[in-house]
Length: 247
Image 1 (cartoon, rainbow, N blue to C red):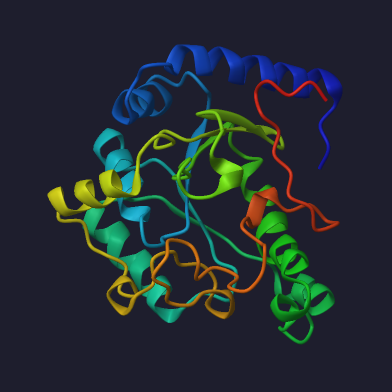
Image 2 (image 1 turned 180 degrees about the vertical axis):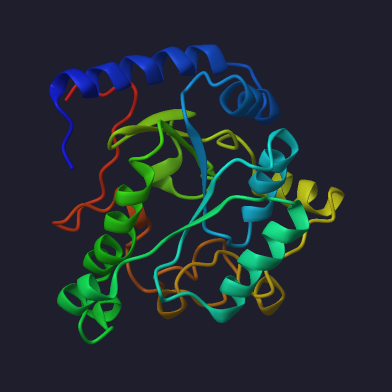
């Protein structure tokens, strides 16, 4: 989906303004303004229910447990992840879970053998993540994510507020280190994803994830792929529109 120039420029201006407003604020303060203050419009949380997901969801639950939580069910997740979705939302008292899924009809065309992840992983992400996510998130004005600058080189310079398709993507944990994330999870005694104990440090779809000693090295091991989901375009390219982008 491509926005008109006026709409895109409007979103960029709003993102830039919010980045100024959020400068110097901590994650809780940003969440208060977004969830309770409505400064970015209708808000949802995007969660992978992966190894670090409980931290953002706990912070959101403290502000408003009825905040919609969007889980992208690619139909390729570990059984442990699907069980964790139910267990974690119950534990945190979150009441509005939204599942975004690719339709079986669409998969029959785009991935009839269920093996696209092995032959064209970016195309697999586009079919199983990007398309259903756009369909769901276009109903919101802003989406809260757990993305952090330390996670990948692509994310190292990301703004707290970015433009994604027709909504704002807000990353309240952008400057949290891995040590800070883990310390908070321990302090709050947050339920851990069951695969963490088996050596999984970053957890995505089952075919493309394996245990690893290095952070995120177990995602798409042996390839240069680092991003998935909403950042993948139909031609397999990674795209993100920052607040200060001119084109």
